Length: 192
Image (cartoon, rainbow, N blue to C red; front, side, top):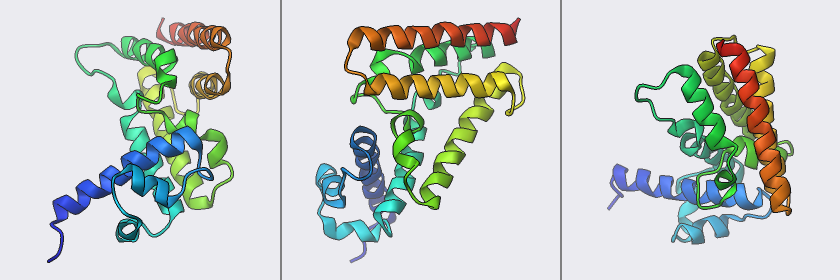
């Protein structure tokens, strides 16, 4: 008897959630298909009924992580664009964003790892980045190729990526605060 489509979709999502978390924490090379499936409470045998390869899983995991990231969880209710930008900046550049308990932004947590992957994975990463740029540009009232938008997104992603790699908690706190400060200044310049 074939699995109902809803159950298959739920299992696929369960695998993706585990993969996104593991890849964010450890990177592509330090996570095996067995690790993902074991973490999802499944056996390896079912993997290929959902994904063609580990690379295909990685690409889909980037999309899943992006859908669960801070930027995707912005409250919509009655906030101005400037308030949304400040909220996003505060949440994204907060120490809690570095916690493995929270959904991690694939742009920051997978940045250096993705640079060494195949074209399919890099294409997905590029699309996720472009969506963030377009989203922030819209909130800033700028074009997506605006220097301010590109600088803000690079500072946010880079700040979190570097902070995640540091072992000095004081430096992490100071780095994220500095990124928030200059991010706020970029936003203020645009929203005046």
